[in-house]
Length: 481
Image 1 (spheres, rainbow, N blue to C red):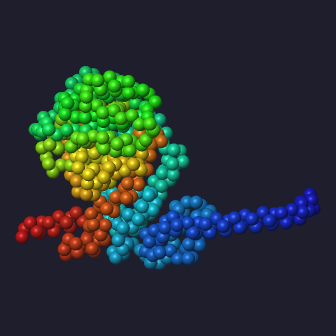
Image 2 (cartoon, helix red, strand yellow; image 1 turned 180 degrees about the vertical axis):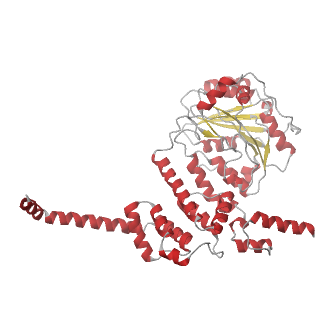
Image 3 (cartoon, helix red, strand yellow; image 1 turned 30 degrees about the vertical axis):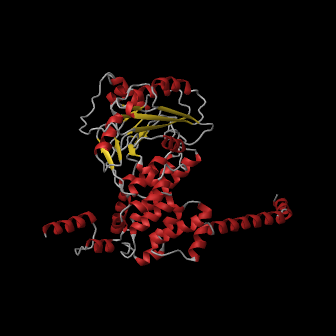
C-alpha cells in the first residue's frame, strides 16, 4: 500500500506542484489587489489613527493585507492593533488632546458605515474616548456591526419586515400589524376627534398648491379625492396630480371629480418617472404661494390645509410648518377612526443638529414656494428620501421650521409604499444624505478638540470633561457682569 501511494504521489508530483504554485500566485495577486484597494487603505489608516495615533506604514499594510485576505473581517485587525505591543508600550490611556477626537469619530462613521454622525453621536463618543481610550474599541465594533447589517440589507435587497414593523418617530417604540390589530379590537372607532384651537388667521388671497404623484393608486384614489375635496379650505387650493403612466385607469375617477371641482389639475405622462421628478413637475405647473404634498394613501383632517396655511400666513418668518401625525395600518379607516386608536409620532422641534437623527418634518408639511426659487427643486437622484435632502438643504440655509402640536394628518404604514416596502432604499439614501450634510450642518464647536473649545469659550477652568457645564459657567459669568 505504501509503495502504491508513493508511486501515485510521484506520478502526480508535477501536477500538484503546478496547482500549489497557481494557488500561491492567486493568493499573492489577491493580496496585492487588497493592498491597492483605496477603501481598504482608508479603513486601515483610520484604525491606525484611532488606535496608535499615526498613519499605517508599509509593514503594517503588507501584514494586514494578508490578514484581511484570510479573514475578510476588520474585527480581527481591530483586535490585533488594540492588543499590539506598540500600543502597550505607549501606555495610551487617553487620546492626545492635540488630536481632534470628534474629527476621528466623524471619519470613522464616514469610512465604515458611509454616513455622517449626529451631534449626539459626536458628543457622546468624544467624551467617552477622552475619558478612556478603550471606548474606541466599542465605537469601532459598533460601527462594524452596523456595516455588517448594511451589507446583509443590500444582499437580501432589504429586511423581510414580514409584520410591517415601524418605529414611531420621536419615540423608542416599535409598532406592527399584530399590535395594531389588538388595539383595533379594544377601541370604539366612532369617536369624533376635536381639533385644537388655532389662533392664527388665514389670508384668503393666499393660495395653497397640493401636489400629488400617482402610480398604481387605483384602490386609494376615490377615498383620497373625497378626503381632499371635503377640506374646508379646498376652495382656496389647487390639487395638481401627476400620473406617471399608471396602468389602473384612475383618470376615470379623477375626471368625475374634475367636472365638479375646477381646481383639480390632472397631468398624465407617457412614461413612468420617480416620485421627486413628478413632484417637481407638479410644482412647476402649480401657482400657489404655499405648497404641500398629499400621498394617495394618507388622510387629512378637514381643517388640515387651513391650519397650515394660517401659520404661514400669520408668521412671515416661518418657512416650513409641520406637525405630528397618526399612524394607520388600515387604509380603509376614516381619519376619526385612526385618531381614536391614537398611535402618533412625537417629532422634535427641528434644529440643524437633530435633523440628522431623523426627518422631523416627515409627513405632509407645508412650505413656501419661494424656497424652491432660492434653493432649487427636489433632487431627482433620490427614489425615497428626496424630501429629507431638501429639508437638510433648508436647515443648512437657516430656514425656519415651525411645529404645531396638533396631529391633523394620518400616515398609512403601507407595506407596498415607496419608503415602507421591503426593498425601499430610504435607509441607504438617508445615510448618503447625512454623509453629505453632517459636516455642513453641525456647529464648529462640536468638532473642536477640548483645548480649542476652551479657547473658543474663553474658559480658564480645569481641563474640560463636561462641555455643557463649562459653557453654562461661562454664560453665568457673563450674566453676572
